[in-house]
Length: 263
Image (cartoon, rainbow, N blue to C red; front, side, top):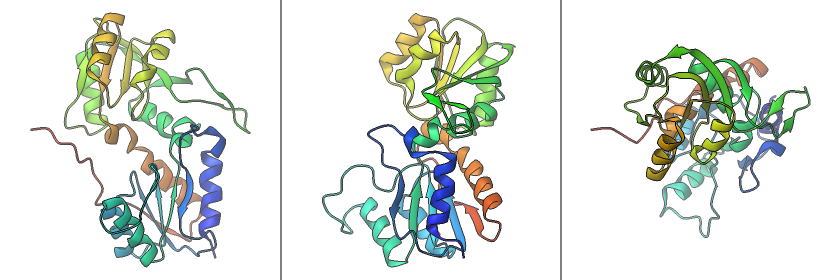
């Protein structure tokens, strides 16, 4: 019988713990490593409605990108959504595993999936932090190439391929050819993208002044949203889990979607 511990071992082989940022919280954050698993729910976030969906489908484990517990909890009551989700998991015997910044940095993880989703070729790691056991470089950002095109044409590709309702962007005054990507909040790394020779950077959660900085740098800066830039990794996780554990039913959350809307 496959256990939560077996799944954790796979997840940490895909995204080793040493690749996470120092401030991050990853791994098994709820439940028991000895618990048998026959069904897994995969989602980007372990929000309360995802926890309820897990019990509704009879899952014993949720595997997510974002952590169930990120900031210190001072109480575990039903007064907050985070606590209610944890209480729901505990009352239904459901465990929770996540891979966060380690999955951002890992080969094949969030940013490799994002690069692939946007059709980038000749993808490389920008400023590798090291190499993994297979000798593959790992690090936060990726860069790759697309055929020379206008910013407007590339914006259409980003919006369609990531299923965005809208994009925020700054026009750096250059066409698009070499593109950097950083799923989620990576705008602080745009100097690294520029230093790598990129003309365009796709990320999320960009601040007002960062758009101005990019425009002055001559860098096209595209905010495609936190959820759209990271959500494609859920299909990767589900595929890896199904391949490694064919005896386990693996489902991607049907209730989880981006809460940010455009009017």
